Length: 455
Ligand SMILES: [Zn+2]
Image 1: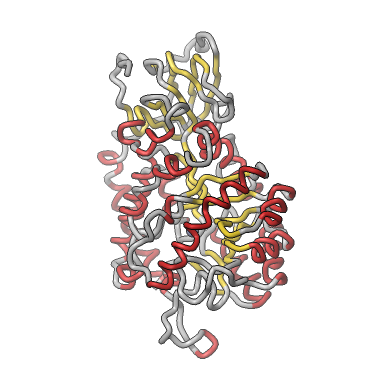
Image 2: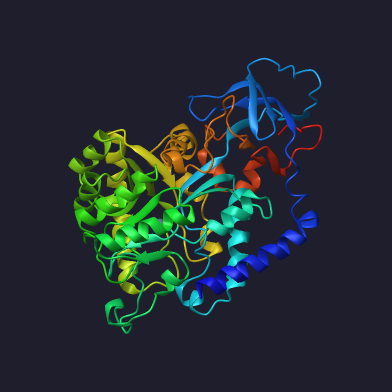
């Protein structure tokens, strides 16, 4: 089944490649040299933007200046007049599932080529929302990443965990009550067949499953360490995996030069994971104050999300829906604690089960305004998330600087209509708010006229 799917995806990508000249090229002009003039540069870290110019050569930012830039002799960059707009780094989403393009019911019967086509569409839509990099923390997206990096299709850079490790009856076990267990001859679950999760119990299976993901090219490992909302068997308070099993995953990640991140909502699961050497917590909504202090003291990243709980996703059971509401109710307390202890906070969305759900991605900016200033939110979505991505160490697929406007950084750049540092909510409507989107030195959207019309 898996092999069949990979074959079909390969076939689809080959078809796309054959027509690349007509479909992809107009959307993404080849990288060359560009000089952004008349822009206000927000560099991903500072409190305020400054007027200046930015020179792009190839896929990197070559130079920045408060005054004018004189390109080297022989270099003739295309000048882009930003009309005084704010220029920012491309956005980074730290928690996505790019292969979750259907509900579980729909996925049971879906044609693999249809699924792959939706994944490609979803990747393009994310890029056009200004997300030039995404961290995929469960899903079979290695092929999608490869096709995007090769330029056959359009989408963000992807940091992929591959299949998330789950214990039996854990957050990644999507069997039905009627299915026999593995040890009595039960087959793979839907999520295992589609590469979303892999069930592993005991140290030897965890070691093998972790090595499988590394073999596929994972940038980090994702392990399910507590109960979750979109699963049936595990209340949020449950601890998943023993300390020995967690340490086994950490050992595999460390030997490949990267780290483990865990799905973890409650205090006990979060403490157990941190003691086992895990360096990032996904979600964390129900952690108590001592645990939040521990997260801060150990320099652990908290990669959390708000928007996914605003409206529980379609196709879930009453049990799952109740857990979504439980997590939503805990969000305010978590954010206040994270703020109090200056925790390194990731900006993620976790939208699953369809492109309509993923379309709410940019609403995360608006929802965070309840706790954070615009510049704090923008830092989370750029330089802050980039620090998390860099934890992939030797497994980092894009080892240059991301999330900042600095000399030598990757040329992932947005030009924004309006004042995002005054009103973050305008980013909720990227079709209106984003005047220009550049990724890796290529322009994917440009609303500016050649004269660079002012807004
Ligand atoms: Zn998730």
